[in-house]
Image (cartoon, rainbow over all chains, first blue to last red; front, side, top):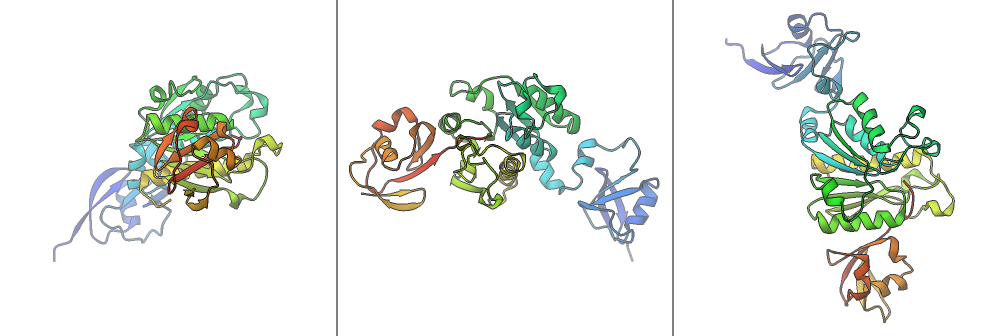
Length: 273
Length: 67
């Protein structure tokens, strides 16, 4: 009886194996020194797991320099490969690199978005550090460039474009014209309304994911996604205003920012929002 | 007249013949608000000259601060 042959991917390289080959057999044959494995997003499955056609298997030595393995692939090994490939092809804009933008950008970079365009005119000051993902050593630096530096440290495979521009209706097309999706991450309500309007008018094909209503420490569940149209989504409770004096806290701002990034991923992956 | 505002049918008392007056009647601050009228985005500077008619569908996004 002829043995069926399968194609699997080990550390992204296609290999042909016999039907019925187990994970332990594949490891012994292709990477005997491997001390860890991730198979189709699942860490360290049972050694007797029988491999199937088109499986994606990552084998590596935990303490090594991960030589011979593509860093992006290994970082994204817990995400389905097809999803990561879709994310690689996306360009997303981040308008404002503060409490929302620094979290949106970081979560999108870690998800393997191909290109991020980050614009912010501001510099980092101490009162930013309660919620914005910067370090003491970055005080005084431009936010966009500092955020790009931080992203490159964890995700060098993401193409990050950092611009020290104040975003206005007059330059938003120049800044975000190549982005399929832009996240509005401003602080002031007037600026939010102005940018959302300008982007929707001047880049009608671009999807805008904005935030409104993130102040204070009210219920997390009150932060929702409002679908205004298939080109505009608003994350937040739409009420909690910093003008009330309720303040801004890292967890609630982070929840809203993570939800903005989550909507971006859903849009790219074709998931229902 | 009746309009669909943010997905809900609302009776709007006269006179609210334009977007600016409608926002005023709804106590929505125009300067921090984005409006789509029957799917078309309306710039703030055009609120006062953009007519609102019976049966119109509006999405009104009134932003608050924080980021």
